[in-house]
Length: 241
Image (cartoon, rainbow, N blue to C red; front, side, top):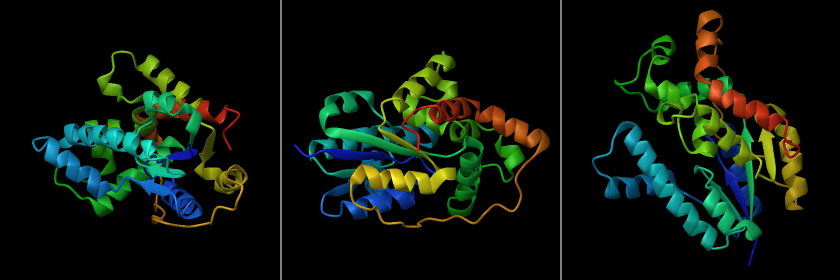
């Protein structure tokens, strides 16, 4: 049985560049979950779902699609999918997990501006100040909790335990990178793969012209507090590059 490298790609953490590079490195045995494909399956199975229900339904579809990819023994799988402990246990002897993180406030702002540029919506507040009062802001501020703890702050009765679950999940990874140390992460990927991983730069976003401060920054930090706790814990792990 071949060994699979599973790259969990959290949105707006620089994962498009590294995920693409890894798939090029393992060109003859690699796979991903095309967003259009998972959305088509979600739409077919859950046609009435919208908003958060649609997002959660699509991620449930991706759980199944990731299980299918793992069963195919690809050498590299790079996906926007949540960490699933049962899948990891099922393929523990033949899969290695890798991810890349970014400071949660920076990640939130990148995600918010990406949505404003590419997916404008009349349902989304036009300003960051107003957006921070929405449930969607709470969702964006807790992507590490969602990806590694498989829940959101407003869906759990025990947020502290949910954060601990996410921390424990990251403890199961072989390599965790930080976008602020991208070169170190690239070097670690090279050492891990045994053959140099190409240096690619994909999906680069324009730099924000102004970073929030004062009360706006305090509100942002409060919204991102679950992810900040998870991120800071990840920095203490020995396998964090």
